[in-house]
Length: 67
Image (cartoon, rainbow, N blue to C red; front, side):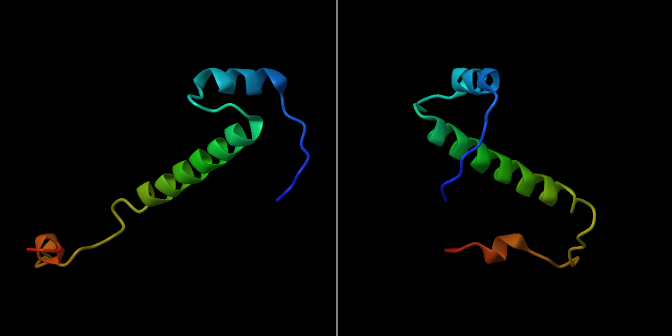
């Protein structure tokens, strides 16, 4: 998707300092978006803590492939 946006130059410069092997603004923005989505997914998983009840006889080892 092609989009024109105005970015804070200081923020972009700072982001490039932390970005390894990223050479273009496009790569920088795509990486930032991927990390944003990943962090939000992890936050959503953490919110489930304590809300899932497992059966007393649940054995996760039986579900492993090859065992």
